[in-house]
Image (cartoon, rainbow, N blue to C red):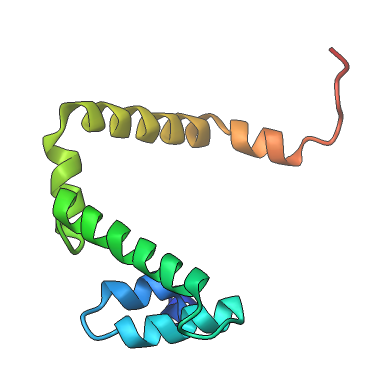
Amino acid sequence: MHARFYAIADQIPAWGLSTPAGSSQALKNLSYLRNLPDDHPYVVEEYESIERTIAHERGFVGAGFFGPLRNVLTNEMLIKRLFIGSSLFAWQNATGINAINYYSFVQIPI
């Protein structure tokens, strides 16, 4: 699945903007997806919005994989949320409730 994602990842405008040399290709992909010319106001506005969002995220938590990870692991509130979510995932799988919900076909009237 990862190989398929990376095969089409260069067509995603935000992915292109996150790479250093992908801004012109991102604009072309965005105009192709919207079926509008490159200089159309909607395309320009969405392109600038994506640029601002990526700049904000890089300024807030840092770029790459370890910037957001460092942000999560140094924030006590986010560590609690991560622990709660991970423990819910583990307990649901350990008790088998996901399988019961998925394979049960009898609906009990309440």
